[in-house]
Image 1: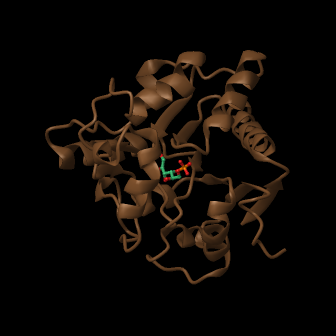
Image 2: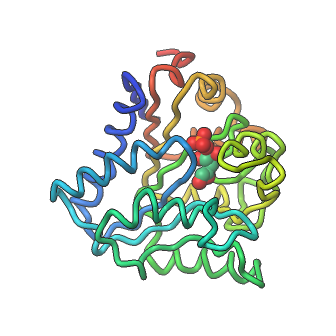
Amino acid sequence: MRIIIGENYRDMSRVAADMMASQIILKPESVIGLATGGTPIGFYKELVSLHNQGKFSFKQVKTFNLDEYYGLDKNNLQSYHYYMVENLFKHIDIDLNNINIPDGTAKDIEAECKSYEAKIKNAGGIDMQLLGIGINGHIGFNEPDIKFEAITHLVNLDEETIEANSRFFTSIEEVPRSAISMGIKTIMHAKKIILLASGNEKAKVIERMLNGPITPDLPASILQLHPDVTLIVDKEAGELIRE
Ligand code: F6R
């Protein structure tokens, strides 16, 4: 795993945005996997800024988001669909037919998950996948004890995740208890992965992910086996990394 320790959050965000921009410049029809949450907000700002400088276009890019809360409509302010529009899609020249986010309101969840996997396959697979990491080691919403061979599926969120994400809701009761998420297998099939982590509350999980055993107890530990992962952290999240 390649490890880049940025001076601060802005630095971490810039390095990641530069990598994504290079990917799109080199392959304008790239298939990109996207993440939500607090960590990538700066990354999206930097990416939009590079795009606005005319460095590249999203016209031929296809995107697939990692996950969506179960039961939230795409117009719900807390949905990941809404997040993506606000933080990225409304600022760039992407063709909205090329964006893909699981439908949290789908009547037939199993069919929705199957068709999401099929769409990724038909697009030729994900060229570059952006990931964040939960303090419990989740990637996407693949919580501890997940099956490594899982593909896109409905997941129950851990108490820890519900609590961590309640900061984006008015009360903890409002946080959905489940979500549709790409599985570990889906993520591991991405050709390149960028994992972002910021803040000292992520330092421990980053250290365990890098040096601990590969175990479903810490889903991100599987990334030790992926051939092309770049971990980009700020100083706080990287403070326990042994060089
Ligand atoms: C988001 C996602 C999650 C987050 C993780 C970290 O699409 O799949 O795995 O990346 O929960 O969230 P933040 O960045 O808010 O700490």
